Length: 437
Image (cartoon, rainbow, N blue to C red; front, side, top):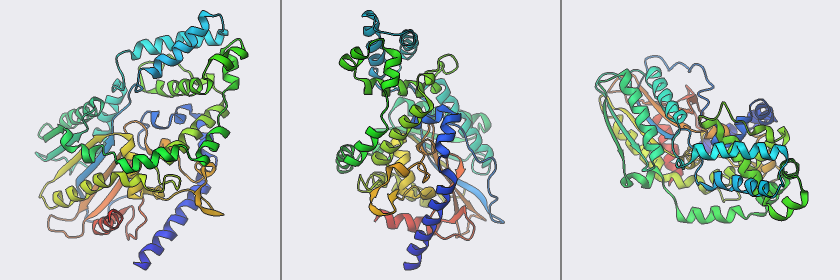
């Protein structure tokens, strides 16, 4: 036991130091080059960064996949996301208080609002295609898992965008192999692990939002004066009659969400912001997600444990399926608010460790998040997913290996392995079981 935790500490330290070297200001460079990355969870699924996978140890073949994925690209949730900024500018325009840029932005918002009318939170065409592409890569990368009349068990939350994501993925699998025996379901019966919310943890999160450290960080990175002066012809007007902070954030959200819709090639709101402003907006979002769904000290490190039921289901289902002669795949379709804490609970790529001040490890260092590798857009873009791919040498093989893919890229775990990124399932299960206890 002592050796195990010593190894974890060494591994985590090395990983964080590596991240520090590799990602210092990398996020700023990446966002400067591609503003869409500033969208955090609005980022349209970019596909795997890794072009080829590490070969499995000699004799091992994939035979089962366990998966949890977020729905694909969607419209914003809540019509106020579209209505409020449009109404704010429309009212100002009726009073002659908009600049030419403000009038242009108002016309763009009218088009965006009209296109999204009645589509609150719905899957877009791009979102459907993302899941077709992920399913196609899955069956092509691991054909042994999907060969013949094998069984596929697919479940979705009861939310329509998740159901449609599941159905698009399954349709693509059937195109490649029409013999697949597919069972698919979306029921409140499974919501206790597919989309679980813990009241005690929700209370902790609510308290964390009012934490002085988070509030100070957000205030430091809030810069909207220049944009307001660009949109409104009177500084007195917007200061007295406009909720500038809310409007700034609403315009930023709309700018980021365009990449997920059919308007992505015709309307671009990113030029409203300078590169520094985009980076500041993203930093606020990045810190918010870290506190609300990551391992932050501010939220007592408890939020990842909201996904205990999901991780338990993954473990128990895998233990059951790997005993079968041809288990196929277990596919689950849900939400980003499950994927991020699950990633942390699993301790993938060191993301289960809080980012703390080296001089005071009792507090989070929110200014160091991006330098230390906490980049939310790499964790949970639209259609983000975690895949556990199981390998064995034969049906009677007791030494089962598992490789974990995070957004289709090989992930690392803080446990010993003689063949990483492949791990012995008994070691992974023991590590996770210890956390769950």
